[in-house]
Amino acid sequence: MKKTIKISGAGCCLVDQIYPDIDFSDPKVDRFMSHKKGDGGLHPGRLVFSEQFEAFSGMDLNLSVNEISMERAEPVFNVGGPSIVALIHAAQLLQDIPANVCFYGVRGDDRSGEYLQSKLEQTPVNLEHFNTAKGSTPSTIVLSDPNYNSGHGERIFINDIGAAWNFGPAHLDDHFFDADIVVFGGTALVPKLHDGLTGPLELSKSKGCTTVVNTVYDFRSELENPGQQWKLGGTTDSYKFIDLLIMDKEEAQHLSGKEDLAEAGRYFMDQGVSSYIITNGTVDTTCNSDGKLFRAPGQKGYPVSKALINDLKDYEGGDTTGCGDNFVGGVLASMAWQLSGGKQLLNLEECIAWGTVSGGYGCFHLGGTHIENRSGEKLKNIKPYFNHYLNQIHG
Image 1 (cartoon, rainbow, N blue to C red):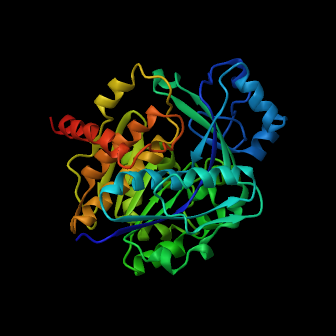
Image 2 (cartoon, helix red, strand yellow):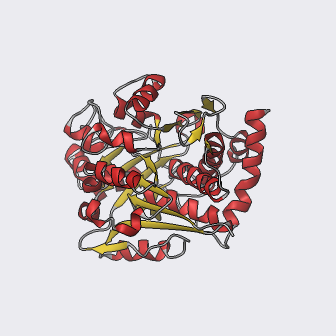
Image 3 (spheres, one colour):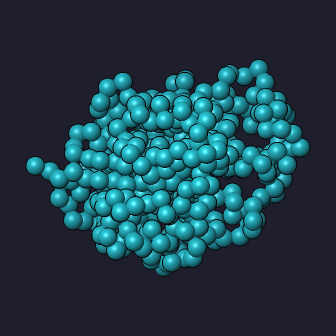
């Protein structure tokens, strides 16, 4: 009998309020766009805090959003956040093996928190350590333009940290570190956890856990030091305790201080990261490994799925929100499958393949989280794309 694979995750979990058909070129939107880094204005693909956006616009947040979204579709609410969305997707894929995916996080004691709790209870994620704190539930207004970037789509995020201010390393108990894989996701939106990240990462490694960190746009760093290199934890010591670091292009550039992605990758490896993956929208995903956890990848760049691009071409009703988070979920699921099968040296290419098709599949629904109608639904739907993708990259 295969042993149960345990994944412990902590980080960003929130309610997404998604406006699905915004036009970023509309003059009503353009007047809210950023003029320089860290000024609190909107920018495609980036995140801004609600307080700074209100100061930039000179308007109440709701009035601004009403003006931006006037005469467009009503917002859609969904579960969001780089940590929980990735964990949900991994847990949904892993229902074919003994797996326990646990989330450590916090919600507020308001109606949004009740909504979030009710949606999470419809997923396979273990919520035993998902706590309630006084205050508002973390939330993000997502402005989604499906026609941006030649029809590939993009989003703008306006975030309220809310009760996430109350969560930090002290909330991670011994059970958290009793895991095969430990994941920290989007910690820049959980400030105490982010600033104290080095300690939990070091402890995870001392307990024999495999560590994964997936990042998010760090507006707090950009606000405090515009244009300067971002920190991941209190010091650069965090990096040497990371087995796999997953970022998008802009996050990698800001964290490394390097514009060129090859130089950024060398920076992370020089700091002690064992392996990294850098996604880049519809451009090739890049990666590397020192060979300790993963065997060297078959190639340096991995394209998007042609089959998914083709099927999404005329599809309406989804958006790109949460695609990166689902990419991470696919990577985590692949790691768990390989560990469950007894592999000592994991296949990074296989992880990226599952991540690629998982991220692309996320475009079939609005928001990052899709609640399954039945167990195994997602795995059944995504597996053919995975097989097709393997043929694509090895064709």
